[in-house]
Picture 1 (tube, rainbow, N blue to C red):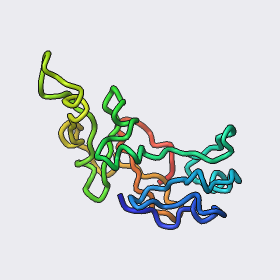
Picture 2: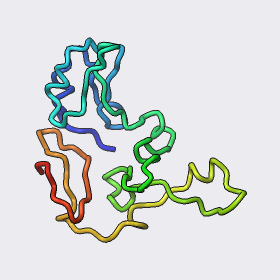
Picture 3: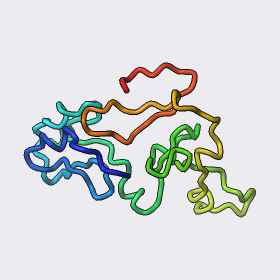
Length: 158
């Protein structure tokens, strides 16, 4: 996953708790966070919040511990409707993956069979064109997150 360029939340963090990880995701090092919430105010996507108990800012980590081991993020793995996919945009949308039904049926199906069964977006999605693809607003950071929507009106800005 390629890194964002100049994310506002990273630029305003006085302690470098908000940073770009090696995998290109934006992460928060809680041990460095002082809870000033500058990154919360700077985030154009409103995805950060203050954990009032710990007095640190938090956000989705894209399950970095899982994805580093080749697993899917929990939001993708647990989506019963198989409406969420995860992948590297540089490899193309068609290569994004989601859970699949294991090929084995019956009593011989193990946890690993279910856990490791995957399918690609191109294998199950209806064809789409460029007008169906919507990106998060580019506020100078060139985000790599996108949505494929059909039959719905995009409420965000391109």
